[in-house]
Amino acid sequence: MTNQAEAKSKKFKNMRSKQVFPYTGSRRGYARLENDMIINVLRDTISKLYEKNKSAKPSSVVRVDVWAKAHSKANGEPSNEEVAKNLVKIEELKKSLPLNFTPLPLKDDMFSQVLGSERQGRVRTLGFGVTPTRLGIISKTTGRVAELEEQLATMMGKMEKMSNLISKLIRNQVNLSCIYHNN
Figure (cartoon, rainbow, N blue to C red):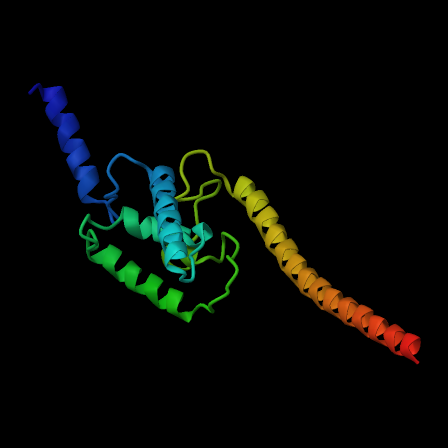
């Protein structure tokens, strides 16, 4: 090995030794890792549908899940002590959340609570090119969609009740007309 290559090797060894959270997700990157996790959730959902069990949503894969998977070894064990401490904090936060929680803004989500806020213009664990502005637009539309779905479910329930009431009224009207015709 040449002196230049040895110096470069030594430099990168030094940089790797200083990493607090070593990335163990191979060469995939966060975006592909998240996509794989969503596909696995969908597979589980499909198999559970056949078993008639409650299904999970692909949106249940959040930033902390991707980070935890990327910083854990293949056997599921944390890559170092610092990662282990943060995984414990993440699990505590997950346990404290209500069942039907809506995702928090980027500044207040579980990831930011455990690992601190992002550097300006950056969003960790979502792949290349994601910015807080783009993510804010997506989360606003996602929140609005969830709100509209809730309104739709409420309206469908009301329409069902109204339909039942109308059918009862029609039956009563038919019964009354039969009574008057028979008399």
